[in-house]
Image (cartoon, rainbow, N blue to C red; front, side, top):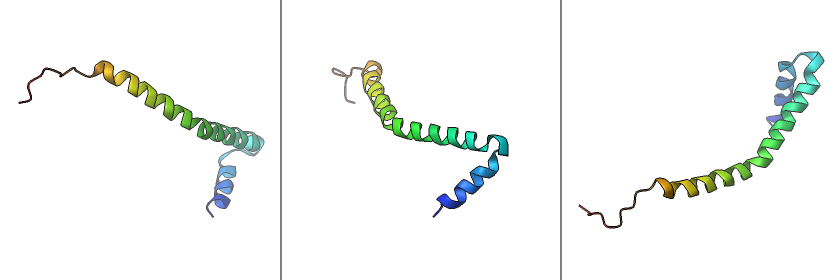
Length: 65
């Protein structure tokens, strides 16, 4: 339902001479980012999992209270 007015609004954002180019580039970037975003999520999770033990303090023999 919301997709119909969206394209009309996006068409009004750009001048007539560059309208199709601007819309196609922005659409291609959005599709690329949305298809690659799961990979970025996995990379971020892996980096977090690797760096967390490096900064964690070892409290093996620490007193509890």
